[in-house]
Image (cartoon, rainbow, N blue to C red; front, side, top):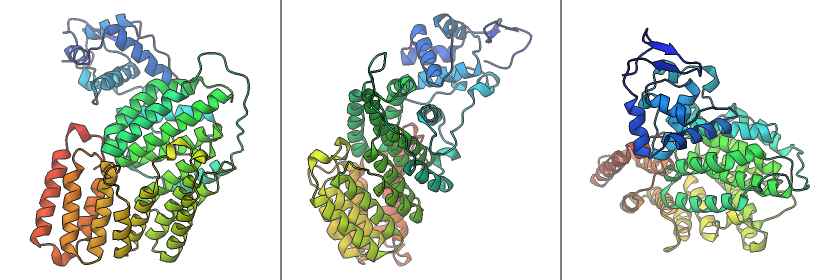
Length: 487
């Protein structure tokens, strides 16, 4: 319906292309109707998206009317329209889906999509710009190698960049303009974190991105100076950014997750929030360990411990030590792992609620037991695995995703103990209880369990039946709801 420009097309002074004698753009009209988007509302969102990207757009309701009549927008405008409608519809819409021609929608350097190079940002404006590009790429691109690829070459420079950054957060007079809304950011982050615990990163990622792009990025772009207000804003934004990283990580988008964690480090440094900086480094350690980068995981966990600064929190310190213990367990260093776990437990026993930041509230004795269970699973010490896995479950409070992880850890422990009946039963229970969880990590736990079953049992009816259940469940999970997962 919307082919390339021929003699019946004439240029328009706005830079768009008018189609003479062609039908109206029914694809765009249909998407707008489904999204209940008015010309005014869509134009306003296009201008907002352009502003977030540091661009200017003159798109107004009249321009939207011209596009509905068949005129082609500029390439970057076509992309902003697609993003705006994707947000309203809750699914990805491409410029081509809206009847925009490939030549118009996909060319032009001004709107080219690319992830920022992974590096510790030089300053706050660089971090804000990188996060804008990253969020745009993350929401507009369904899948790309850059979204799933961990960059191991960047680890050393990120650690040194953060540890030796002497940026000082100095309080000053209140800035002009509306005050930043840090409390709203924290409240939204806390709510979505609970949803993440319940249903997995696949459920929360796009919600987080929508809030981040609409409410947080504009405030970051407007941040000036280092007043108390803006320190609070940057601290809240760093917390939300680390949640974006977790949701991407849980969805299998490891390159995006690593980017969010690294960009968040600059926000934490500008906010003078060393505990959040340590948290972000420990997140990178957790991710590196999951991806088999065990030495990097140890280095990142130790860097996190070195950066907490004068503000101490025994609970946060216990978490950081637990990350080091998990990396040591992956390396097979049983003695060092046990020593670090003992240190983590001793610190945790001395915790004081008034010293803890609110975001660490979830990390209780049950969570610490879960970290120990993972360690002993990786060390193939079955009795300790089952002991700590049992301690890592609260029959009332443990959220579904955490329970699904711990059940698979327990199943591996039973497998290492040679108890195939128990292992298969626990694994099957975990799969049946997982329900609507959308977590690439949990699905990988299931696959690793199946790979760990000895070849001698490959044709055992219990194993064959379990593989059938897994295949069926994973096939049911495929479709539009999980289109952005790398699994």
